[in-house]
Image 1 (tube, rainbow, N blue to C red):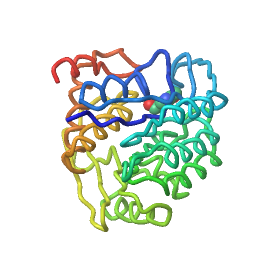
Image 2: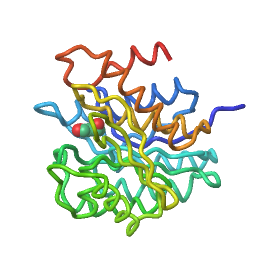
Image 3: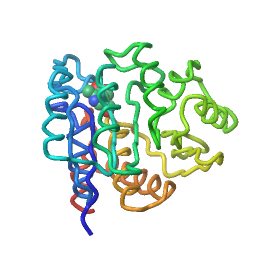
Image 4: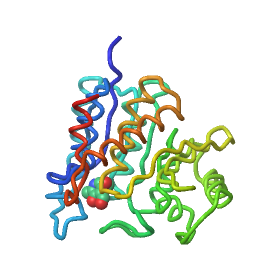
Amino acid sequence: MQPKRILTMQDLSCVGQCSLTVALPVLSAMGVEAAVLPTAILSTHTMFKKWTYFDLTCEIENIYNGWRENDIKFEGFLLGYLGKKSLMDLAEKAFDDFSTQNAPIIIDPVFGDNGKLYGGFDLEYVKAMRNLVRRAHIVVPNLTELCFMLGWEYPESYDKQYIESALREMKKYTSATVILTGVQFDGKIGEAILADGNIEYVMGEKLPTSYHGTGDIFASVFTANYLNGKGLAKSCENAGKFVADCIRSTPDGHFYGVCFEKVLNKF
Ligand code: PXL
């Protein structure tokens, strides 16, 4: 059987293991044909002290014209860091013009973590993302992104009731399955999945350190598994285990990402 071709739309950070430099190798190694649409080129990701940013909005219509000429279609979409509202409008155009029937749209909102927005984002961006996720089949926010999209304050602590009401509140904005990542209970970490009105948890080992870029790895491994026919829960479980293995393979002091290469080599 031919691998599924998906389009992943996110930035290309030249240095710092995240976004396209993660999605491309992970999707390919897991048997998915990864087509890319870079939204911006950055010297590094924005957790470095300084970075440069070149927005690629101006080139995307041109790329789309090239795809139209060749009748190119995608059997799935994975969106990560878009960077600007203009890219969201262009993402919708891609869903409209380059999708096969029933191609899943998976959106990781990627605009914040630990209760804060990443550098360069504001509440207008959050609102635009909340509008974009109405097109998704699956949304994969962390708690920061979920709270910002709901207009809720980031909580100092939470219980299952809080998580479940936040997930259900998201139904005001999208009919997508919502997979909340990085949920922590009883010393474990995992996902809370709201699908078809039911909530399910997939919990795994919580390691003592956290690293940048693990959300992007989670989304890529999840997407590859899901497109390869694994269900929601199994895809989350595999993605969570993969991230944990990456963290275990990363030496202290490697602050800008995880050494996923070592885990991919064993895959
Ligand atoms: O890992 C998320 C991410 C992706 N791309 C860029 C980022 C970040 C998080 O900071 O800065 C450019």
